[in-house]
Length: 129
Image 1 (cartoon, one colour):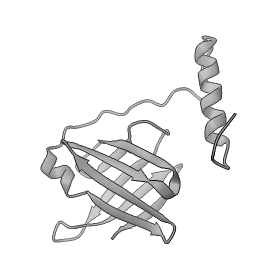
Image 2: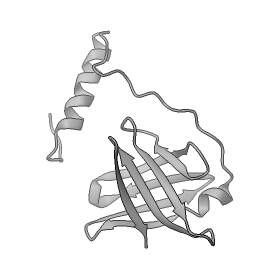
Image 3: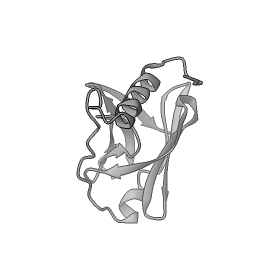
C-alpha cells in the first residue's frame, strides 16, 4: 500500500476491512459503531475553539464553524475532521478510529484549560494555549 506514514497498522486495518466488504465477508474486528450524539448550540461549541499543545511537536487546532466543531493537527497528519458531541464536553472524531474520545476540561470560571484524548485505554492531556 502507498502511504506517507511510518505506522502501517491503520492502513492494513482499513485495507482488510475494505477487502472484506467488497468480498461480502465479515469485517475483521467488526465495524466501528457510531455512538449516539447530542445537539449542542453554537455558543456551547465556540468555547472549545482554540489551540491545544501535547508537547513541542504536537499542536492541534479546534475550530467552531457554522454550528459544528472540527479538529486538525498538521503535526499528526490529522486533516480537518468533524467532532461529534457525546455530552456537553466530550466528543468523538466523525471519520475514524474506534474508541477515540476528546474531553474538554474547564476551570472554575468556565475557561477551557485542557483537552484529553482517550484512545485504547490511554489518556493524553493537551493543554489549551
